[in-house]
Length: 338
Image 1 (cartoon, rainbow, N blue to C red):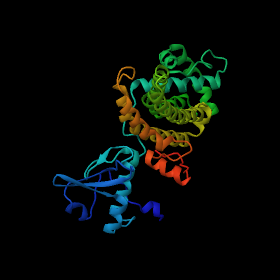
Image 2 (tube, helix red, strand yellow; image 1 turned 180 degrees about the vertical axis):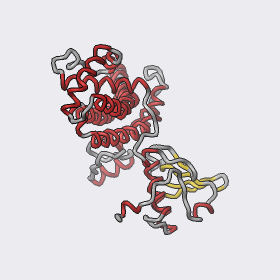
Image 3 (cartoon, rainbow, N blue to C red; image 1 turned 120 degrees about the vertical axis):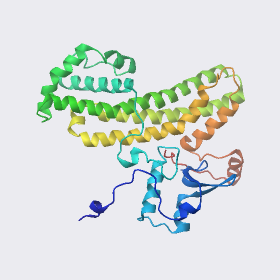
Image 4 (spheres, rainbow, N blue to C red; image 1 turned 135 degrees about the vertical axis):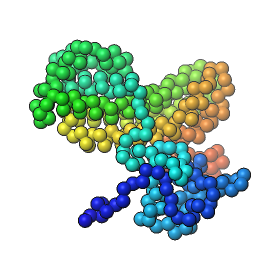
């Protein structure tokens, strides 16, 4: 029997067996505010002690292949999708089954379904009036209830089944629905993340133009705007990759399992991005940058963007920059992973 076959099933909840975890009292797992690494927080009276999971393993001799060692691995992965975990909490489905622990809206399902319908029609009816339809949100929603498009999809479903060796038109329509559900998450993140970051860049550009005569403010805002544009480009490229990979109906349906894994991998990466961006974007939503003093928010935005998107020199505080200038050294920093 293979090692894979003897692996115990993944537990659905955060369960730790060692007495170490019961002697601490109230514990909670979350990511560190300073470096983002998974850690255990312990409440000691009115104070809180924090211990990185790597140190926890080492200090208490928790072996990697032990039940608690495997659970700590799951906790570290789970904290990519939830803000915190306590013993007894249910683990997010992303680490258990690959399903998302959140849901797209009906509108996002409509967007994804219409996009795939258009791809199907474009494959088998390239001269159809829908074959070259735009794929922007307004057009997709307008066509979502278009009876002519629905009729065309039903008409080409049988020829599609024959070409894909699916034997029956209902199999094509079933797979279309399944993949629409997977891609609905991408549509949700396109709206909840990409569109919001694009909007932030647009707002910054408008403020930069309005304040171009204020040299100091323009310099700071200009630097933050450039970093935000780099962030937006990275996100847009990721969505473009997903659209290109899933845009050909025949290719997607011939490799459903691989395509599903590809979509979910990108879904999870984008969702982690969204969770990182949400607090900052929420603060920008609450200000009128033409009226309010945004100096503090600009500083916070720079602190968020610089370590992730500074293209060449390593992000440094002003004091560190001064020391580096004195020593004549600079540091290259790779793009930070989410």
